[in-house]
Amino acid sequence: MLKALSQFMAMLVSADSRYDKYVRGETGGTLNPDEITGLELFKIKCAACHATDLFTDQSFRNNGILNDFSNDAGRNEVSTFPDDIGKFAVPSLRNVQKTAPYMHNGKFPTLESVLEHYTSGVKDSPTLDPLLKQNGQLGIALTESEKKQIISFLKTLTDEAFIRDTRFQKN
Picture 1 (cartoon, one colour):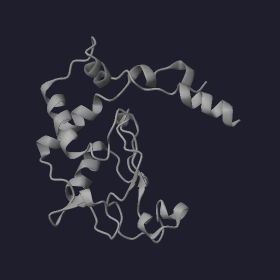
Picture 2 (cartoon, helix red, strand yellow):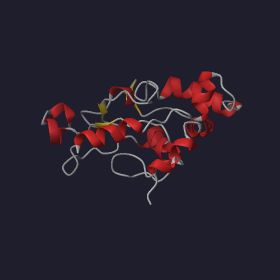
Picture 3 (cartoon, one colour):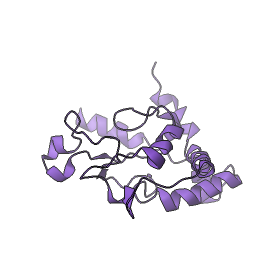
Picture 4 (cartoon, rainbow, N blue to C red):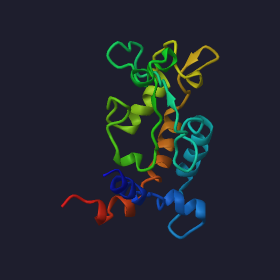
């Protein structure tokens, strides 16, 4: 069973989004000005956690969704390390437009609500990621225009060929 599952998972490669074509300089890889600006903003404001071609650094972080972890301790439930309280896996953002609801607990229904959280909804706690608490300020400073541009960029990570691949469709 494990071998079959690992072979199946090895087939799940999403690398043909408009962004991928843009990076490779291929036809169909044109980004509009808002998407390019969104990419630049993403690199500055988001890529510390959502790094690499997978758009995740594979780490566990506390992103300020909660400040009471009595019912949802995160990674601590597995590791039992106090420093892991409230930390959850940083997900890949590939195909993020298609994966709502967002966050480990499905709290946010839209990408707009996710960015609103990072702008004004981050809750402080002892294990809050330091990137979300700089210079005494919680969250990530983003204007409404910047949020829209980042979302425009995130939508370029959608790989329609992967999503429509009939090998992965329910019969």
